[in-house]
Amino acid sequence: MLLIIIGIGIVIAWAYILFIREWLDEKLQGTAYAWWHEQIEDKLWASSRTILAARGYQVVGWLISLQALAAAAGIDVTPVINEAAKLVPEQWRGLAIGVFFILTGLAFAKLRKMTTTPVGGS
Image (cartoon, helix red, strand yellow):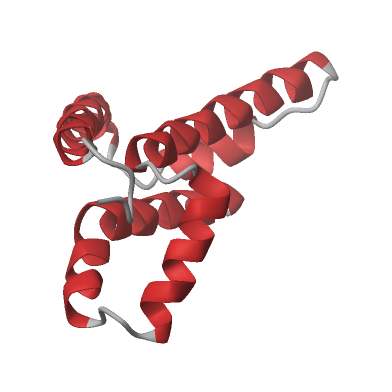
């Protein structure tokens, strides 16, 4: 269940980073929202969308490392992984992984084009 919640959070974060943020900037420029999100981005992500995406990938690395540590400690996390895998039908799992990497590659390419200056920079 935790992995499902984390997955949903990652999808929402990607949607915000790639699409929603720019739209909100245009619509709510000069409001408290604009000040709020720029303060948070400046503090947490060093004013760069590329850094934000890289930190999202770090979370995946941390989760894999935690799973490896749990396995080394004798904790069986197979039931949790099996439940997460049931979200995608078995015949589509290979395709789903491929599509995931294609979409994240496209997202990184888009982020790289967008980040010639820091977020909020001139």
